[in-house]
Amino acid sequence: MKNKQTLLIAATGLVVGALAVLLTLNGNPANMGFCIACFLRDTAGALGLHKAAVVQYARPEIIGLVLGAFIMSVAGKEFAAKGGSSPMTRFVLGFFVMVGALMFLGCPLRMVLRIAGGDLNAVVGLIGFVCGILGGIFFLKNGFTLKRTYTLSRLEGTWMPILSLGVLALLLLAPSLLAFSESGPGSMHAPVMMAQAAGLIVGALAYKTRLCMVGGIRDAVLFGDFYLLYGFVAIIIAALIGNLAIGSFNLGFDGQPVAFNDGLWNFLGMALTGLGSALLGGCPLRQLILAGSGNSDSAVTVMGMIVGSAFCHNFGLASSADGPTSAGKIAVIIGFAVVIVIGLANMRKEKV
Amino acid sequence: MYIATFHTHFGAMSFKRQLEKLGDRQAQMMPVPRALSASCGVCVRFSLPFDQNLMASEDLESVFLEKEGGGYGLLFENE
Image (cartoon, rainbow over all chains, first blue to last red; front, side, top):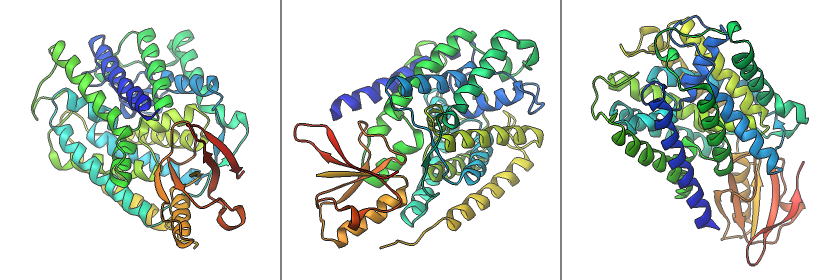
């Protein structure tokens, strides 16, 4: 039983890594087969929530991830509408998880894909990510809680799939209503149907296995349980082999695609994302998957990430290949302050 | 052995400490088995017979009994 599960999550990781390379080969930006932060940001741009012309595209991968999780949870009779666990706090945490990710230029999943592409800046990011998660574990061990969830109406749990279908309908039936980048990362994308299919497959598998970049490190540290970490490592192995096969493996710090080489801010960006995600209980990918399977707290978190991404581009907080911005650095520092206050303010004393 | 799932990580931690106080030396926190779904990813596996009055709290979600030969039987659900 346990071996079968380990096999499934390792296989899931291999599929995610392979599909990521396939999407890159077919048009997605380099080392960006999947990136929840970038793709939510691109989708926010497509909907006109920010005006950064180079990052606007309603990414079918995001829609597919949500719908894949939705279909899988309904098929397995596990779809459960739940929520009510400090929604506004989760919104703010989602916001700053995005600020950290757009400082680094990628969510934890893209961090893994960047490592597999030879981008050593992402290894610096990984160290920051682990430090952030260790900070989150400190709060968890000291009684941090966002309070319990409650069972809600089925409709409440279905909003994220419904909204995703709405964006898909716009993309397929009324694309003239959406913004599309003509240059930059937003203009680079795999064919819609391929991206949609890849999202559906990964969404279904990630739901089934609970694949989570934060959870892997958290469970390894807290319980010595490496189940989720196998998925993490399998993604790197598959994407690494794929990148080597198509000749897009480029080891080093300099000249990496959609990345910069300022170690301090790569570290701090991912540390903020790791800390915020640990308090939320899952990485951005996991939040999307949970939102697809009925968790409205995660749906609110995703909304926080979308608004965060729009802020990042409207106020010049997001980094670019040229490096971080001053405003972005200030936002990350504010982010640490806010997330730490959230951590401290939600620590409960033991009842026994 | 029993498996208790929780709405929060904090609930799992409190439950484990409570069981330790009740003398359950085998109680341990671990990730929730995939066969069970849970709000937070952490469960407590314990050996003392489950007593709702003594052990249930707001953060407790469900308690299962591990069946011999695999599988879980639902003993308690807190809505």
